[in-house]
Length: 548
Image (cartoon, rainbow, N blue to C red; front, top):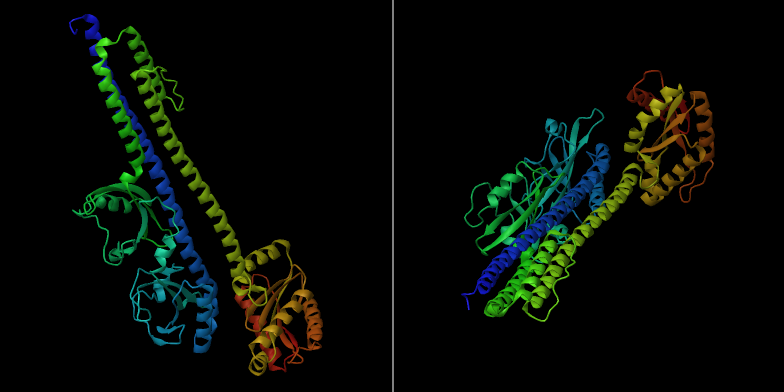
């Protein structure tokens, strides 16, 4: 039978088809494998970057809270009761993220939220010129005598009027909070996220025996061959990926990483089992190989009995397969017949649809993750706006606080200089306010402050800048106002307020010092003149206005 030319041609052609089909399946596997790997790496890298950014923003929020409240510590450094009150306020604003709040003065005397005091001897407490050019400092995990578990210390400097370091405000965050933050990361079934600090020490990991024990290193580790190359990449790249072999589990893993902006040297890793990435395509290819092997065996048994009508559909099928592999759509017409060629065509058609469907699914997942990142960014922007409102306004009187006033001052002074306007500064202080707090309590004192602030707002113009400078002291920047004009306005308001009756307190008065800004005068000198005028007003009997 094999001596005929036709039989030889059919037999040789059949062997070529077997080889071609195998090569085609291998090509499909390699092409889709690389495509799936690229999609998975892109998705995982985006997830790493997104959550590294989210973690950074969480720490940025904590730093912002400390910065907002740091100015309040300037005037209470020697008053332990006031210090503890401010530290408790800091704990409240932290909303459960902190387990302790600390203040260290320039003599390195430390006071915590529970009123405990001692010397600050730990080197992580920066001092003096160590704070130069630093707005904040976040430590690696340390063991604190105030906490049973390791903590991360977040601290900001307190600076005096000359912008020199006068103390440090800090909070302690337990490292057990990090896994809770990472648990919100949406990953695949066999993926997990973990963190290392600036020293390469693992500070968060699903395996608890890794935490604060293992360190990443550029040295070759026989248990994790290839991981040292990923560590080398982290030294020169902010984001990246790589793969290594986990000898303990005898499986290959893919790792993506991203550095945290607000924590220099800290790195977020996302680890995924390589088998999980390729599980579906392995299954599809394996099924296709099994089906193909069976069909080819049947084809070879009956090859001698096939005629020219068999070769034509085979050639057509070959062209269809090549066209489908090279095209981007999943259309596959195939060959319709009741024999083995028809079955092979159906198997290819089913395989192509599964492979294309899986690819489309992965692309959809990447788009969903991208939309999720956009949504998170929008939410983050909204939260930043709310935080800016909290930073700039006094929470009790809803007037601008000192920080916001100083921020707006340069703009106001530049506008006054540009238009040649006259501006006057008025410093107001409620008379005998301490007696109100001492005799009637802080709640009544707060009501007096709020009523006073409302009266100021009602009697001032929209263009005037009103600020609660601190305690019972207020500062007003008045536009197009000479000393005489301001005096009349402030005196009218003084008279109105002195006629008011405050429940439980009676009448309340205030004293005012005013100064009209001189040409090329520094703000600190201008403010000093107004303060001196206020001092004279109080010295000469209170409930009066003195011009400088």
